[in-house]
Image (tube, rainbow, N blue to C red; front, side, top):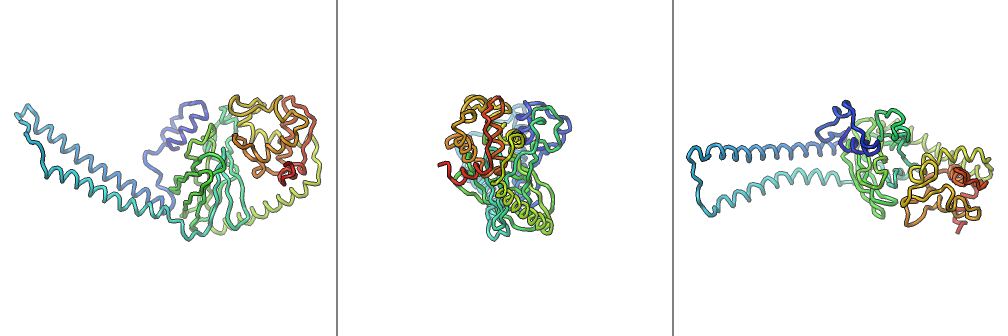
Length: 383
């Protein structure tokens, strides 16, 4: 556990103190990593550290030697002079040479970190409050990655797992031994994609695309976090990367392609179906608790001044604003924290969660929303 992970855990759990085991496991040095670049960064860090140690020993050694050997009790008399050209030259030249000695390896490492040329795989990473979206270029594979830690753990109602706040439902999967380029951007506010084991930390800025890259040396599970204060749930935006061998990666990629294609075909079949109120409410509650409750709260009461209530007020209880309700959930609302969930949820989940919002907590409009109605809004027919 790093200091940052400890801080985010404290925020999420009401500033409870860490256990003795957690405190003992915190490293004092930076992560050495599992890539060539991360090793270069670590070596640079240690080089600069040792240079600073030597400078400190020399400076403080000379200072204490002078204090001891030229103390008043030994009859030492301070020299009286106004300036010394030699001293002026030395204390300018020596730091200059030290800085040059530091700058040369630092520049080499920085240039290597920014060299995203000739990638073998490109992944678009998009941050939004509070999740990551991954899209594999030329592979027709994309998905959202969300925090998998349960609300019960966050509320201290259940024991926390080993990877508390550092687990997701769908990790990013990458092959080892391949140069992977990341194109990093954001849908809303500034985020930062940070995986210490790769020595990759890049801001995700809305309207801009930053580049980073990695080449993982060995299979494993590597964890990171959003390293930018991106809102009230900043500590609930982890990153998990699973590095696989090329054969295992290809198997995963093909399986994911087939599964996503089948899901798209199933959605098209769903357009002609009519889901029952019970089915919609059951799925809707599950979807709402997973994706909406963090802002609008579990009972739809909202957070005054930040997120509007859904229980008993607004479009969710207005029988003539059903279409507007669908549009807000699908397209979001400009100028607010309300995201567009059209790209994030399936047609079935969208229909269910809107139905749930219109009939839970005593709203009781009696309205059901079907997948075909959601698809019509996605197609722009609500305009």
